[in-house]
Length: 250
Image (cartoon, rainbow, N blue to C red; front, side, top):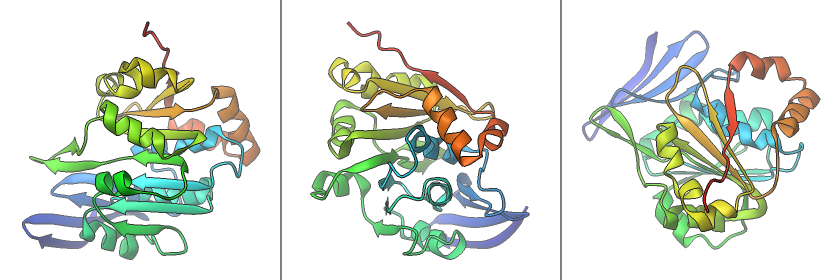
C-alpha cells in the first residue's frame, strides 16, 4: 500500500493511501474511509451504512443526511446505488472535507458538504425532514475510534425528529452490545416508534450497524430491490449478516 498524500495538522497525522484503485483515509492511524470507483462495494462498514436505503423501492430515498463525512465513502456508495436527489454531509474536521473533495471526488454535484459540529447543526436545523439519516460520528482517542455522542434518549429523539414519517435512521456502533444499549432499543417509548429494527454486520468487523425504520419492512423487500437492480450476486459476495431486532420491552 502506497502513501499518496500525508500531512500533520495541529498534531494530527493524516494519510491518504492507495491499494490498486482503492483510496483510504487514515487519521492518526484510524481507518476512516475507503472507496474504489471500479469496485464500489468496499467490504467495509460503509457498505452497511448505505444498505438500509435498499430496503425501499427505487426513488423513495430522496434526501439523505450524513453526520460524519470522513473521506466520503458512504456518500459515493449512496450516489452509485441509490442516487438520491440531495445528500447533505456534516463534518467538523476541515481537513477531512478537503480530502473528501480532493481524493474521493465529493464535489457539489454529488453532495452539499458543510463544516460544522454535527450535533449543534442538527439541534438548530429548521429545514425539511430527511428520508434517511446516517450517524457515523466518531473521533480518534489513543489510536482507537470512539463515538462523539452516545446513543442516548435525547440524541436518538433528535435523530427521529428530523426523519420523514416513513424514513430510516442508521447508526454505526462499535459492537452489538453498544447497539443493544442504544435508546432506539433500550428505551420503551422510542423502541415502539420503530416497527422494524435491523442489525447489519460483516464477519471481519466488530461493528454493528443499526437501521431503525418508521414503517414495516423485511429482508424480502431488500431482496426484491437487489434483484430489480441486478446486484443480488454482488451483495451476496459482501457476506453481510442481518437480523431483525425483536422488541422485548414490556
